[in-house]
Image (cartoon, one colour):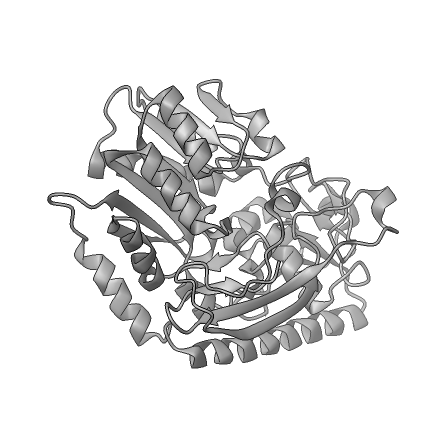
Length: 411
């Protein structure tokens, strides 16, 4: 579905500044017998709203195609994210308290890893994961209840009737996936206690722009979020951002804390500090995004030239990890199985499959040591430090890493 209005302010004042071409959904990995089939592809272009300054995709793929069957992301695999969520649980308790018996709801909670962190931290709470994917059924803890559905106002109302109101609602890397933000916020209003808190994490637009993280743009991510537009959205629903943390995960993210407006509910100073910083850095200026488009094009040219030179010199190149962002990079840059011999991946769900669009085989990590490539292209560059530690033997045997973002670099 091609959008005609901004999903926050409903303005038609939209300007396309980046066109990455036609892409298959980034998590639509293929089985071998599907390689000769025609893949469904959709436009991947990005718009700036001249009214509220939200950055958003211009085309919405039906969520049922992205998040239900054959969804392959599993959150429990990442030690970095588990550590981040343990920190989140502790911070929520420190700032707002998590009374015994509270209901904690995670929207789009995947296999329940975040909610398990509340139990692992010693909180005596009821935990509920609302998630439409098959992965949610493979929950990592029996203490986590699951509603296998998309979050909506109707679902939230039914949850409130059955479980009561929630003290804490979390959503990590899910708010940016939502097309109907009004319905989402009505659902939050129906489910959240009057003194409860909504805690959201999402990649920060400022980091995306400054670090040229263009590969975090894919069909699941409908919005690329900054503080200014969100203040306007929450204002419409009687809510306020009371605090914000900048955190390093996913190349730079925000963790925001949102409450219903009420007596004594005020925003911390750092909220307006970030709004001022966004203005200084040009996040509310269309020219910033036109410049970003040029920088993305230059990154592509530099990476393709680097890989071409290595291949012409007889070097063997493979990929390490097969994240969704990697498929944006591979398809936009035209990097296929003629360039990468394979992609090594720890997630067993992806092993034995092929990357969408580029058809590179995804194999277990052991393949690195069997085939001994000269270079590994790190596609999950946000976890590059973890990956290079894990592949210590590869480096010590003379192998080298290619980090594509923010500038192609051999390490």
